[in-house]
Amino acid sequence: MSTIADVARRAGVSKMTVSRVINNSGYISPDTRERVEQAIAELGYIPNALARSLRFKQTQTIALIVTDITNPFFTTIARGVEDTASEHGFSVIFCNTDESREEEQEYVRVLIQKQIDGLLLVPARSTPDSIALLQDKTIPVVLLDRTIPGRPADTVRCDSELGAYHLVRHLIELGHRRIAVLSGPDEVTTATDRVAGWRRALLEAGLPALDDLVHYGAFSVDGGYQMARQALAGKPRPTALFTANNFIAVGAMHALREAGLRVPEDISLVTFDDLPPTMAIDPFFTAAMQPAYEMGQQATLLLLNRLEGKGPETTQELILPPQFVYRRSSGPPPPEDR
Ligand code: RIB
Image (cartoon, rainbow, N blue to C red; front, side, top):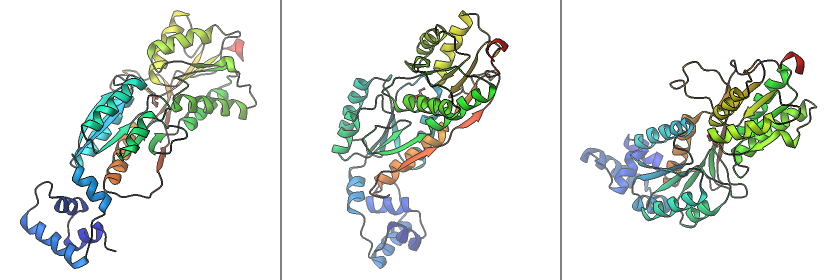
């Protein structure tokens, strides 16, 4: 059974060119068209019916829904998406839900009406409503950054549990024993996975993973400020904070400064997601950095493959490791806490 790759090889062109000839989309020189059509005839190639139907319906447009357009983590993902999509002749509609499930569902309805070819979705909550609607309409969807437990879907994400585990182990190796975790909403898998990594590091070191050290809130500066104030009220006070993203870390710093606590002399702080180098003049945070650009790139390639009717029947999950930077926000606990 000949494939689109066989035709491309026989005609000496790319698979995308063969796809455009089959679909009569985009400019193709007469000579190239003739070579491709001859290769199709010689090989007896029959385009994949599902792929053809998708291509016939194609508007050459995909959409990306993120949850916080102000966060550099998501704008970097968007950069990876847009670069990759445009290389393949696709436009991108960019939507922001402000972590709201209702906003997300409204956008999904609008995008279906606009007949997008596929969707890259950062789910605002771990609920299946949106993805169920898309899968019912046979619109290919790839989840980015977060999963929806119990609802298998093509997914590209960073390993939040592993990143959290290594950050907290770093604090334990510095001598910290009472480490609070300030995370996002407990209905978001990156938030719960980061708490899970915190718990695994403590238990592995024989330290209690006490519930009063766990704070769930918003992935925001104000969320970080509120959770840090709650954590500092703990008796005894924690000697270190693990914040689940960059905005929580910034809010926590405000609360620590307000309490007259120096970092790391009086208390250490480690975080997921650094501030981008263009914004952080003097990078300070010990951080787990997510490969946001690559996440956007890989998710887009996975989605475009689905549009071509490629890939195994089973859903694919690509989990990328974080990179770690160790800076001045983490140090040994104060002498009185050792
Ligand atoms: O800033 C939002 C956070 O939630 C990021 O760490 C990202 O992983 C997302 O899940």
